[in-house]
Length: 509
Image (cartoon, rainbow, N blue to C red; front, side, top):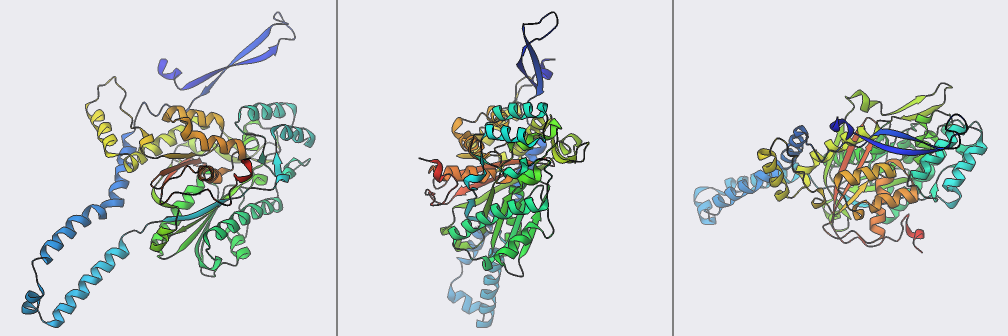
């Protein structure tokens, strides 16, 4: 019974004065019982530990084999002199051996996976005409006539505890009476945020549109024909042989999925620039009905977009901000409860919206547990891993296994700014300090949940406050529909100065 009680959280809610009955005039209370984020620091699934070491071996095997092979080769070559070569071989044989050695060296360099560099990124901030406070949100919702009193009360309760501030951005056209999602509204919104972010990042990196070989766009709900990636190709007149991809239906975790795809393509196409654009169309996710389970996206989602320029040019290391070190993706779509935890559907009146299950925190917790367990062997210091395995092998049955300190693996975290409750649970379970959570909480307050671009607003916050130093490791974690949980670790190649253009600039006065 005690084990089951740990999986739930209780909340005492004051309901006000009783109007009738034997208890009229007295204050009544109710107790809410909800599933909490699973305590994944109390147990470890060895399947994911093995998966992490599988990544480590498969991605770094060439690094383990190269040093001994090189040492043997040098030891053998050192025994020969030019005089010995001339005595044993003729000029033709020497030239042939030299050419063979250069060919082997070329293939080694060519086949060895190159580094993926992040030159720069940009986050779009809409103009003040789109700015909306929580009070204005409720006022417009009431005036729209689209929501009943129960829905309005629910929105007020959620916004009050959301962690969202009064300066987020929203297309106010969604409050029109009888509003229905339209392609026109969706296209207008994404063209504004995407084009704005791309213009800024191209100006910052000095990369010309014709030099971009790979384009990847992710947007969860809005999928148009032609695609959003085609919209960008048309607007910026990108090259005719561009490798263009459009990712949809993956929610907030799709930004890291897009980075993973870009990395694979950069490995396949040397000396290439990739442009990744992450966004969400709030006007397309908006729900004008009264199904409470479909109201959460209305309360949390806000306008935003991020554009990222990646490169595999070796010389770009000297001007890049970050180098991609590790990337882990976990997908739990095989589990029906996880698969249906975030689900786009129509209500009884045919209005489209995104349903969010009451089990979302528990589902997300299991996915996050799997991800960080897999990520551990890739990022943790050797001492922490030895401590972990020693404890795992010699542990006593009743003792909880030792869980490595993930704060030793990276200096900064950018956890998807979903909601205050989710951030609180993650901080508690991962035992993170307020410093590690600051970027996520500040982003949620200032910009709300901008979906897949949220983790880039968080990194922009760290840069604007001069937190990133050379050698620092930054871990971005995001989850999304499917259900998936993705993480990526970047290493700073230099001290990152306060940028001249940032979505945070005017907020410091």
